[in-house]
Length: 435
Image (cartoon, rainbow, N blue to C red; front, side):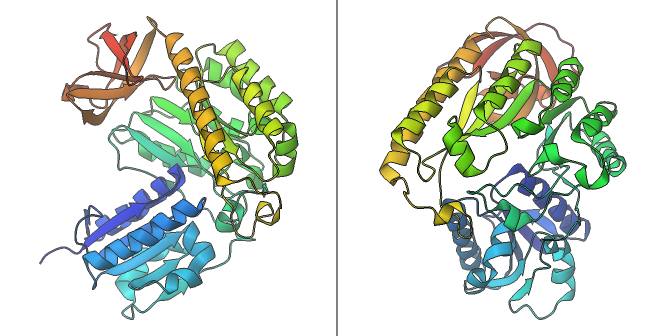
C-alpha cells in the first residue's frame, strides 16, 4: 500500500521553521511520506506569516499552487495568517483546515480523524493562553532551530505578532533542558535559540533567560549554541559576560535596533533609547572584540522625516555593528502605526532602504577585513554550489572551500585568508582534526 504524501511550505521566521519541522515529524511517524511542496501530495500544509503584506501575498499564492497541483488534496493553512485572517482564507478555493497558532499542533489528528473536509476553522484565542508547544527543526544537516519561547507582551506600534502569537510564554528550564538533551542525542552540532522575544524567557515561571543559557551551556552533545534576535534592554551585562566566558555560546549577536532616532523609537513604543543600545554594543566589543553584531532597522515608519532618517543613518554608521537587516515599513491592520498619519511614500522608503543596504555592505566588508588571517572554527554545511562547500565561523563569517562532502557537519580549524568577490572567505586548513 502506497504511503500518503504530505508537503510543507513554511514562510516567515525561524520559529515557524522549528514548528513546521516538529509537525512534519508527527506526520512521518504516522506513516506519511514527506515530499517537496513542488510535488503532487495528498496533504499540503502552509505555515503562514503576516509580518508584511508581501508575506500574506506569498501565502495566498502557495494555496493556489497547491490546489492547482492536486485539486483533490487536503490543504491546511496554519500559523499567524490563519490566526488573524481566517475569514479571508476560507474564501480561497481548496482550503480545508484553517488552524491558529496553538491548534496547528493538532493538525495530524484533524487529518486522520475528520472525514468531513469542508472548511474547518479552529481558533482558541491566544490573549490569556499560557500554553507552550516546544519545537525544534530536524530539516537541516548541521543546525537545529530550537524554540524556547513564544508570544510577546511588548505591542510595539508597528507589530502584529502579539495579536497573532499571544502573550509571552515559555516552558520551565527543566523541560527546556530535556528537549535540548534530545537534540544533543542527534547529529546536530549547533542549536539556534529561537522565539518571538527570547530574552523574555521564563517570566511566567520566575526564571530568566540568563538562568537558561547557564544550564544549556552544560548540555552534552551540543557543541555550539547560537542566540537569535534578543532585545537590547534584555541583553544584560551578565548575559554578555557569560557569553564571553563560554566555549559553546557563540560570539554572534542579533539585536533589533529598528531606528537610530530616539524620536522614532518613542513613536514605535520601543523599550529603550539609542543610548542604551550604544552601551550594549560597547560592552560586547569590550569583552568580545571579534563578535559579529547584526541589527534590524525599519525605514519609512510614519512621520519619519529626512532629518530623522539622517539622524538614524549617522548613529548606525558610527556604531561598531557588523551588518544591517533592512526592512521597509509595511502597514499591518489593527496596529497603532497603521492609524498614524503622515505615511512615508514608497519611493522614499525605497531610497532609504537602498542607502542602508549600501551602508550594510560597507560595514560587513569592514568587519570581514578585520578578520583576515585570523584563526576560526568552521562548521561546514550541506549547501554546495559551483564546486564549493560552505560553512560558518563562530562569529558567523561565511567561508568556502572546494567541495569535499566528508566536511559536512564537521567543525574544522581554519585560517581566514581572502575575501572573494561574493564576500565569502577563502580559507586555509590548519589541522586535519575532524570533530
